[in-house]
Length: 317
Ligand code: SD4
Image (cartoon, rainbow, N blue to C red; front, side, top):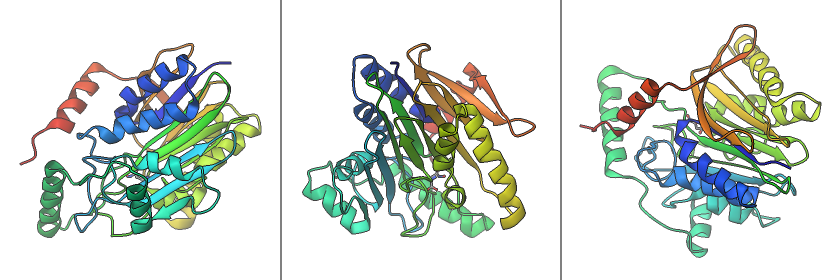
């Protein structure tokens, strides 16, 4: 038995380190994935997840999150939840119920309040400023309002052989009120089966859900593909199909890990992720689409990391 964690984007890295520390000490996959996502949700400078997340068009932060137990297939999810610091913890709590385990809008928020989850105003002054600036730019320059591609999605494997998956996002910046992406949707934003492996997505939810891409990757792993083969074979042909039949394909990226702790990713855009397992410590890597439906994976450079740090903390005028 081994352990491992993979998660989307550089922002997940500190959470991945935490998850692997827990897993190394016999922690469960569920606890590790929740701790990972909570770490990202709590960090103010990540503007697409949790506290500090960017709001919808009306200036309201509406979050989507999900949790899945790969042993039992139990799923809990929330969509359009407001004023709750750790949406993924609410999702995990809901996963214990057979009925009413996917709650949206005020029903989700009420559940969180009644069950003592931390309630805070999620719109930070910084996020409000970014929203006001964007409204102004949209008026002046006729810009596409949609921006951002930064859900945290993660898969964990523990020393008992159990796996878990979870996601959390404030969704597309400037989304319409009530818009829900792929992140809380089983099979699209995430999927995990402890006997096979799991996958999670980030990117344009409207397109990810057209291909049920997380489920498709797990299905291919169940057919005997490695996580990298499964990612490549699920994602790249689907992008081609989408372009041909729908006329366009948004940006998206997926990560996967199997029950042996092996991993893979596929993406149609520059994409960072963090991964670690018993054999190799947690590290940040960069993926790009390669030729012939493959993925190029390289170590991240210090220059990239420095520029990232500067960018996320740049003052907002
Ligand atoms: C969504 N996949 O809501 C999520 C968020 C994301 O750019 O990754 N946004 O569609």
